Length: 407
Ligand code: UTP
Image 1 (cartoon, helix red, strand yellow):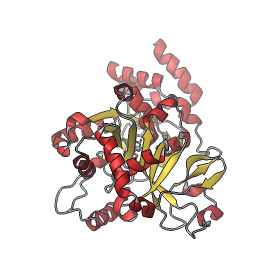
Image 2: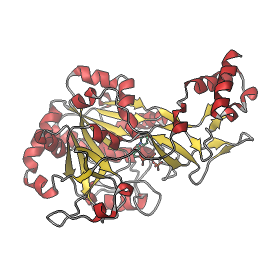
Image 3: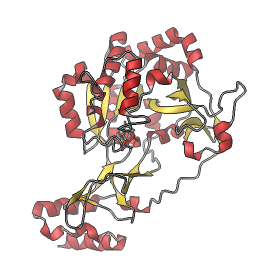
Image 4: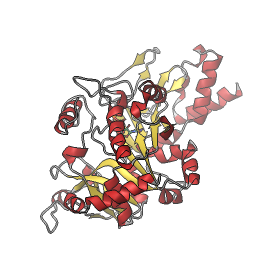
């Protein structure tokens, strides 16, 4: 009783007492579930109002261009392959997202992007990684981040497809944390009578979750891995553990690298790699002034030209120095399932609530230096965000075909 009254008092102070409206209907297990969750919940999200943090002084950051890369490709690739063979490179697949825009209720990697045959997104990625494994003659340890909502499905899917030909001894799964979601009136939601609606805490959660899972400790103490290539699940042309990229970052002696593509137009809605107060950083498209969007460099290219594609290489040693990194928490307006006052589950068709997310791009600011490594968009960037239109299943299929991949 004491436990309940403590929580009641707390929720009343926070204006969230509605979370207990089904409490009396629950059996003992349900009551315990709900109380435990309410006791451990991160209520700090209630203070996040969506105002963005003040930013510093932005300056353009040049990239290693495709011309420069091609001129030195063989040497850089050898450096990367050597690092892979020595077991210095691991890959982190960010697969904890909910893919709400795609409207697919399974993990996005389980989506069949094939047309005449089955070709799952996970399969595409593993195929690309296997190309590197063949080239290097060595496996790249792969760490797959899932969320509590999709962990079971993801593991079972890999298992039932025999890890798409990858050696399962080189694959580890870990689960990211979650944060409660809040509706437009600032009320926390229930996803069941005994469960507060929570969502994965954003792709920036990978580092802390990897630490909490013990994996980071293990790889640090194995003293083998030196680099982690972090990448998104939803780019079907994603080239991870790309030897040339790895070689270029090692050769440049920077502490991190980011694959980038030239912007399609000054107004393209993409985050751009730049400098902020002298450190590498990413400026979001909506943070750029008209002058920044259209400024040209001495060669007549856009000065803020290089859009990020969520494929980064981090030095493990550098990451480890920032043990307790705290990233800003952003609000994202998305669809969140909830139960209404009659206890019925509602699956909204349009965004109805705020999720709270940390972003991997905010980790770039914590790095001393970053190599922007330009890749050809049509060869390496086919995001699957939406059902149709821009960055959709259709556009990704077209790009797969263009790259000679049978679908
Ligand atoms: P997005 O930012 O596109 O989010 O993810 P999403 O949840 O997949 O899709 P929408 O916005 O709901 O439609 C970019 C990458 O970050 C991963 C995704 O799996 C994808 O690889 N991600 C995102 C996570 O791993 N965890 C998260 O909490 C969010």
